[in-house]
Amino acid sequence: MSIADGRSPYGRPVVMVCGFWPHATAEAAQTLLDRDPTLRLLHYETSRPGVLSRHGSGEIPAAEDPAAVLLADLATVAPGGDASGRLVIVPESLEPDQIRTAWQAQRHPGTLQVITVVPADLALDGLTDETDLCAVGLHHGPADGRSIGDLVARQLEQADTALLAGQPEGDAWEAEQLRVLLQRIAPWSQHQSLDDVRLPSTGRLEPVAPLTRGLRGHAVGVHEPVAEHGVTACVFHARRPFHPERLHDALDEITGQVVRSRGHFWLAARPDLVLSWESAGGLSVGPVSGWLADVPGEHWAGAGAERCLAAAVDWDPYYGDRHQHLAFIGVDLDPVRLHRTLASCLLTDHELCRGEEAWRSLPDPFSRTYPSAAPSCSR
Image (tube, rainbow, N blue to C red):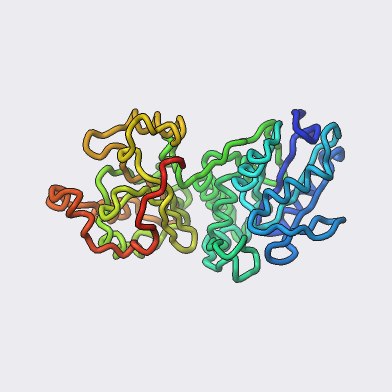
């Protein structure tokens, strides 16, 4: 196998190998090198917080944007015109979208492919690990509040290709359960085993941004409520807002059997905010944007063409573009019970009729997670 030809500042496509477990990324890189000896391997790692190192070179201060530093360094060791392909092992704390964002910011032309490698025997433990990255020295600055579970899930969701290395402990049924689980978590990625990996000829240059895909008219997950090898996936849609206190009280019940959930939602107490929802181990929510319903049409341009089109097509005369769009993936998850729980957290007809001014006065346990003023609609 050889990587497909394509133009880039390095001659041929650049392939980035991501993953939280260094032994798995190293094994995947060696497999690719064995199949295409023309590749040139570059290996980056986090030597200590805020500092990268490249094998065969010294340390590189990375501050809070290691992806940008890595790509800038890559340009110095892989100048244009070199016919060799580049196979780059990236530090275990990097996400594919961070790499794509830096790639675009530095205006790299050509092809970028990002693969994520997950060892089968550690995947489920990683996805459910609530340990903060700062506790293991892999955080990107003091504001990085990601957990290991967040990182592993994002690396899978944002990959062009997700590689499963090895087999989980147990029988063939458990192996198939893990395969289904990973496909439900990242339905838009290509899924392969390390034994028969074949890289695509092209990759995404735009960030995948799974949490806000729904704002741009894309699915944030698949709706597969009938269990397959014990794995269930379901998507919740609604127009009316959540009652903040009822939703907060139900969080443990909502996330109890969930391995991964993501998407966006809105609360009656803050009808001006699009809030992100993300769980993998623990749950985190936060503001990502304002709603277009609060913005005059002539000022929509900054929100992006896809989001504007999605809002216009699905516009509601009362709610505008406000809506809930959440995806849940779990093992032994009851989708009917989950849907009923979420629906019970929405405003009742009586609460809805009281109007927006009354909504804003509702008790709001989420208030500490967002600012007093709404962010712009540009995301």
